[in-house]
Length: 407
Ligand SMILES: Cc1cc2nc3c(=O)[nH]c(=O)nc-3n(C[C@H](O)[C@H](O)[C@H](O)COP(=O)(O)OP(=O)(O)OC[C@H]3O[C@@H](n4cnc5c(N)ncnc54)[C@H](O)[C@@H]3O)c2cc1C
Image (tube, rainbow, N blue to C red; front, top):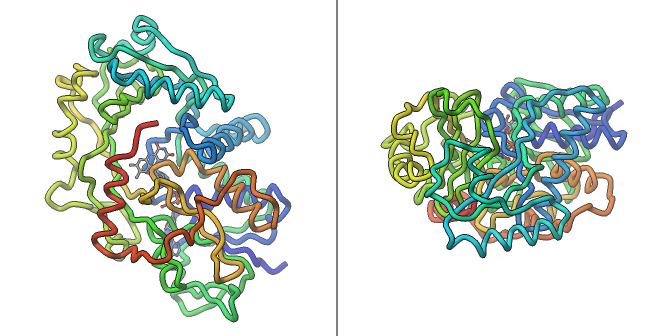
């Protein structure tokens, strides 16, 4: 059978889309192409948090799909995606009480389990926290973290079992169209793969394929980063993910150590043309290649919550691009002027969380079904006037990361 649904990019979005298409009986029509090994770009670098606790109902729904998919992959397909059902704490000083109460009310109204905890209950779960650093805490038991590479691989294997085909070492030069409809993709080796549906899931490189089609995507690849401490006996306790809301930082257990990240006031951002095909060794900011100046900025506030950080060394630093949009919404939907062209990008640092939701939404759009979420705010054509390569626009996207809340 002719494979007429092409997915460009085998990161977690491409894999989840293929899986969702397979579950709708379209697997035999799907071809995924990538120039690099599957899940080797942003996906394998993620911290793996899957967090449904958000105020936006559409984003809650996308995340909820992923939590359901993780369960389904485990129970029906026997897939271990490294899921740790540890729950998440949101903590802060008294001044955060109203914000925490609002989030708790919105989430419980949406059916997400959550509750207040007192200080003793928090410290029993996370003894590494300094008691004097926070006054109020909410706890959401269904939040988790996964191994993002395993989750992406599980979607992909499921898709392949349902008939999808994967072609690696395959570089897409551009997307072809004629008379207002997609006709296929042109590869860098000069060959053409015909198709009636093309899904641009090329991650940080999506705009390089989209802009020539008159569809600038309102996003830019901003540096995301986290650090992992040395192992320490006081961290073998495990415990939940902890969001320190006033300092926009988070931490989670990681094999006897603590993995943590903090929002920078001025994140580094890359021009999409400068991002290499292989991210290994890529440096966002030559003046601060390892994010030390960002860590220095966050260090004192982090030590208030986690005093042992002052003593412990940093064992690992992980960085990579996340596509931030000025409005904080992902970019998922159809092209307004080229039929058969769809986009799944603009993850805002939450692509693992949104993965199965994005997969389902794209599959519904391909099938012409009514979307399960109100996708109007995710429209790829919502900012056709912007130039996503303009340095000022790149800075706007960096600012979106700097001001993003932890929830
Ligand atoms: C440090 C860090 C921490 C993060 N932590 C979290 C987290 O805790 N929770 C969370 O939900 N999200 C997190 N994220 C975000 C998450 O990693 C991304 O949202 C997600 O991986 C994006 O997936 P993707 O499929 O869109 O992109 P990618 O994984 O980058 O995949 C895109 C693919 O497209 C391919 N491609 C591009 N152009 C072409 C072309 N022309 N031809 C062929 N192939 C092409 C690339 O080779 C690549 O494999 C984090 C990100 C980073 C960097």
